[in-house]
Structure formats: C-alpha cells, structure tokens
Length: 423
View 1 (cartoon, one colour):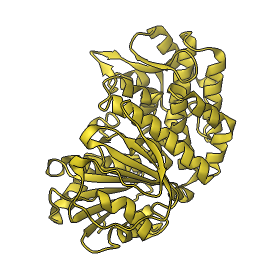
View 2 (spheres, rainbow, N blue to C red; view 1 turned 180 degrees about the vertical axis):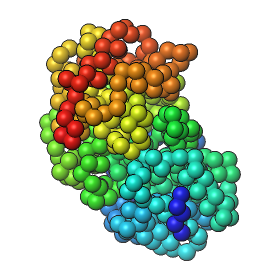
View 3 (spheres, rainbow, N blue to C red; view 1 turned 90 degrees about the vertical axis):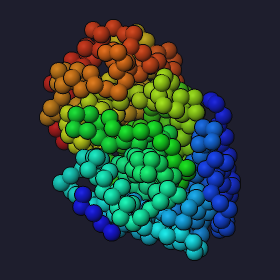
View 4 (cartoon, helix red, strand yellow; view 1 turned 120 degrees about the vertical axis):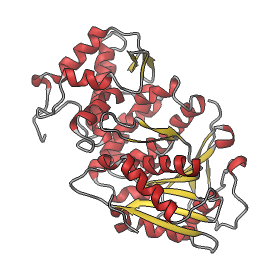
C-alpha cells in the first residue's frame, strides 16, 4: 500500500552463523542455510547485542539465502517492511518479501513511501511521515511482537528505526541498508531520528536494531553521486582512529570503491562497521568518545540545514565539513601541513566537494547561528571533533581558540575560496 505522505568486538567470516542475543532471541524457527559466505561484525551491547552481516548476495542472491539472515531475527508472526518507490521498482521489496515468506508462518505487510523529485529524500524525514508509518502499523493491527524492517538508505532507516522505538513503546526492527552511506554509518549504532525545520536529527531516540543485513550487491544500482557520498563518510574512520584503513583508501581503495569492486566494497563496509561497533560498545549514547564519529559533521550539518534538506547529499556536506575540521586543526597547530593535505586530497578523490560553491547561501553568521544549536553544544559551549597528533588521532573538545574557529568560517565563506557553481 502506498501513502502520500571496546568492549568486545568479534569479526568473523562464516557461511551463516546467526548471533541473536538471548534477551531478544525469537522462538526457534527452521531457516534455510544461506549459500553465500559473509563477514559478521558483532555490536556488543549486552542483551541488546546484534550482528551486522556483510557480503555480496545476502539479499540479492535469492530468497533462500536472504531468509537465513532475516527470519532468525523475527520474533513474532508479523512483519512490516517499509521502503520507497525507487527500491520497489528495482525489485528489492519483492526480494525481501520472498525471503520472509519462503516458509509459512509470517504475515508480511508492506508500506511503500513515495519518491517526489521535487522533494529530496532528506526533506521527507519528518514527524508527519513518521506518523504515516505508525498509523499504517495501527491500521494493520500489528502487535508488540511485530518486527519492522527498514529497506533503504539512511532516511528510511532513521524513520523506521524511530517508528519502531515509538510504536507500542518499542518493537524489534531489522536494518537492510541499500546505500553505502547507510551501510557504513546510519544503519549501525541505533541513532534514529527525524529532522525539525530548524536542525537536523534533533527529534529521535537511541534504539538498536536486532540485525543489520548489508548486501553490497545492492550498491551496483546506486547512482554515482550517492556512492561518492558514502565513500566520503568512510574517510572519517581512517582520519579519527584507523590509520591503516586510511592508508588503504589512499593506496587506491577509494577508486576501487567508486568503480564498485565488490571485494573493496566489502572491505570498506566491514572496516567501517568494525570501527563504529567498537566505539558504540564503549559509548552507546554519545557521552564522549562516540562523538568523534562526527568529524566534520557540525560544519556539514550547518551546510545541509541552511541550504535546505536534500540540496546536498549528506556525504557531500561532510566532505566540506571534514576539510574545514582539518584546516582548523592545522591552524591550531594540532596537525602538520602534510596530514592536512592528505585529508583534503582524499576527500577530493572521493568525488565530493571540499569547498562551498559560489552560489551557496552559507555565510559566517548562518554557520554560527546553526552551530549554536548543534547536539554537541553543552552548557552553552560548542564542542568540536578535531584532528590532533598523527594520522588516526582526534579529540572531542570545547577547549580551542575561538578566533581560529572564526578564521575557518571566514576562510571557507570567502568568495575567493569558493568553487564555481556547478563545478
């Protein structure tokens, strides 16, 4: 139906060995044994731990294969799969339903949210559309044992996850990310939210999925611009905590990902998820170290907010934001010129912008106004994630020279430092 509206981390390779936490473990149910091998990254959160399955063909390899990754994580007899029109047309909804119904016993409802070319997807991440999901679940009389399935990119994942957190005060949900951005970031860690008119992701909840199924085969149909946006997000892991991963990206990894090489995509998703899972296990609700995953995001979110949600893809705005953070870190004397240049150059190689275009509405005043209500503000103090030391080292701090922050904003807003519109 369509509506308008460290501590412990285990990475293992196996031909399917489901890891369902005891407290959320569904009743035993026969499940086909998948034919495809996959890597599994476990997010260790006690009784809310869950696996991230990563491989090629986990969803696109056939109903029997996909069933092995999905059905063991469905606790009751009801499932709601939420996706959008584009993914329905590409056949991913049909594949998901086929996997869930490969054997009898489940009632599967589907909700296809519309795609509006005049309304970018990020602009649809609203409380109104959240209500579309929960109202549909009520209409279908789904109960507390129902499982929601988010089939799509970050917008679908964020909204469905938040809907799962709210519906009857919480039902299980499974993430099936179909974009690189969602695979390496938004589907992992339990951040769910919708946007307000004034700020991005300010209305939401920390609510973990029971499983994530990341099939890099779905990236073969992803538009080039969206793929590049995801590659941009991947770079942060190397800059903030994983120097060997950054060096792999520098040594051609970025280009192989953009060329959609399956092995390179699997490695990048696995390494990104491993890094994020380690951080989430230490700091699930972003009291400290988890904030470091937001390198460049304070600047990037300001760009997205001022420009209008959806004008920029998230990774495009974050590419500029990471460049700004690296430049500020250099000007503070916290990193050397060589590391700054490596960070800037890798962002450029990801085929995303590293500077504002000349027609951007951003100026220093708008940056400062939006950043003042950023989620990382505490007691009136804006805290930033900045690079400090060698490759793979960073800090989350409010102890920096404010004049240097202002210099960064002035430099990047200066007309002389902007790129020609459309370039």
